[in-house]
Length: 233
Image (cartoon, helix red, strand yellow):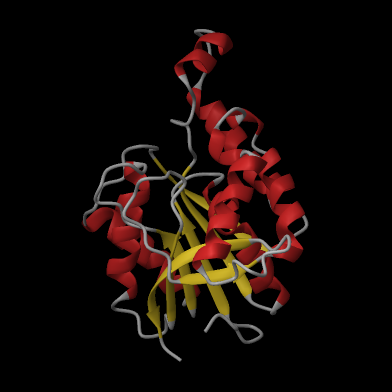
């Protein structure tokens, strides 16, 4: 299902800098290995992803726009040396809204690249996950249901535990695991967040391995999990 032919296009659409690294960095590596053209579209610059304590430390003259530029720079560093197209739509962090404006904006980008495979966030009716993730998932899913070219649509595993996410697709990323860990370390502005830690990702990978039936043959294997919404084979 996830074998992609040379010169086909995979589009990863995420809400914030660091989302792709957390959710599907290893999968992106595998797609590039298969010869896919990979597009990483980030809806916002992540300027809202700063804690109150960190804002106080930086002082009253701190400008969030500068912080957002820094977050995008961290993502560019995380994917340094990888041949993918990376850009932002510069929407306001925390304020994505499901409606015509955002649908039209994202649809224009999907029409521009005409992807065969799309990866985005999972929708979360529980409210546990970030609101931007939920909105973007609904927007991208709404668009892809009308695009016959999109043969595969995957919702990626949320950062937080407690959502309604139910994975049914697991991609082994063992060969790319250390590079993923290094990519997460590029996000210096987000230091201290548990979902960027090695321990968190190794624990999550272990659970994914058990869920996909590899429990008796884990032996250091690492997995990223998705919910497959569409698969045309």
